Amino acid sequence: MWVYIVIAAVIVVLAVALAAYYVPRRRGREVEPPSPRPGVDYQPGVGDDATAPTQQPRRSVQDVGLPEPGDATATAPPAGQTAPEAPAPETAEPAPSIERPEPAAGRLVRLRSRLARSQSSLGKGLLSLLSRERLDDDTWEEIEDTLLAADLGVTPTGELVERLRTRVRVEGVADADAARALVREELISLVDPSLDRELRTERHVEDARPSVVLVVGVNGTGKTTTVGKLARVLVAEDRDVLLGAADTFRAAAVDQLTTWGDRVGVPTVRGPEGGDPASVAFDAVKAGIDQEVDSVVIDTAGRLQTKVGLMDELGKVKRVVEKHGPVDEVLLVLDATTGQNGMAQARVFSEVVDVTGIVLTKLDGTAKGGIVVAVQRELGVPVKLVGLGEGPDDLAPFDVEAFVDGILG
Image 1: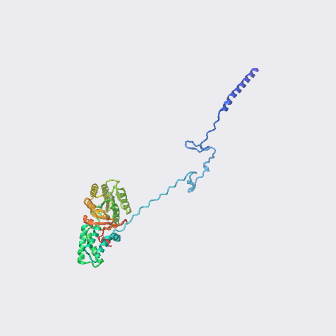
Image 2: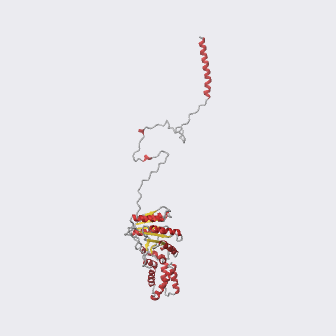
Image 3: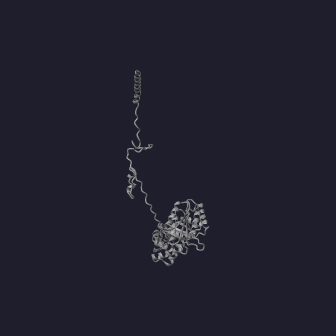
């Protein structure tokens, strides 16, 4: 009996001792609070795994309303976000309108008043001098100076003054009208109406080949613009035209020529920037043959007449084009404001490519209309076209009588 009592007491003592040993150790430990949960206790950041709040009530599929078609709220963005811009509806680009140039016939007559304003020093100066009561040697010297100042050239000026002196001495000059009639007759004779000024731009029927027009000139004369305006002249005459952009050294010239062609529905053959201009010219003529056009007009790079290498390259362009057949026209574009300085240009170009006609640009901006006579005398080829303004249809076929009437006013 006492044995059991002793055993129980020992067990109780051991239990109390164990309790006294473990309880203080557990109380001495620091209890760490639970870690905050991203998405529940704070907004999640970069690197956090967002946990959906378990306290937030969830909605079933049946509780979610679907937007109706055409509902403006269907594309509403979430709170705090900006709605993306709706794409603009696609609209078909309008087809470029094709312009119809005005007829070339009569353009110089229409622009006669503009020409008269720029040539007043020549026409009015001559008429006022010849209308004097007494025509002495000093007056004739003034007449000669007026003609030289108009870039008529020394030889043509001497011829004109001599003829005027002879006719005044024989026929006399009664009044200003008689003086004007006298000067008009002599100027028309000097400009030479007998020269063939027709542009050869008709298609060759015998071999089904288009006419080829090669346009040359120095930089700054308005050559590319002249080619574009010439295309308008031909379109106004109901010709099918194709342009060749052989000025491969200037991308701007190629784009400019293409724009001129697009305005009147004329295609342009172009090559890579810096490519071989002779190759582009050759391809343009070939395309003209394949498309059965009437005329192919080729724009060449502007070049100084003193650059031998560039002039040789121009000769190469012409020779390559002639593999398809003869070139019908070689038009030299000259700036009328350069006066006698253009004569050196004209001589060199004529030697290299056999110029067949002259295009005088900016004739409305100079009082030196005598350049028409001078350049014809120098080259032995006629002025065929004149530029009298900045408008797209201000290139006109040259007409001798209209030109002289414009000078005299």
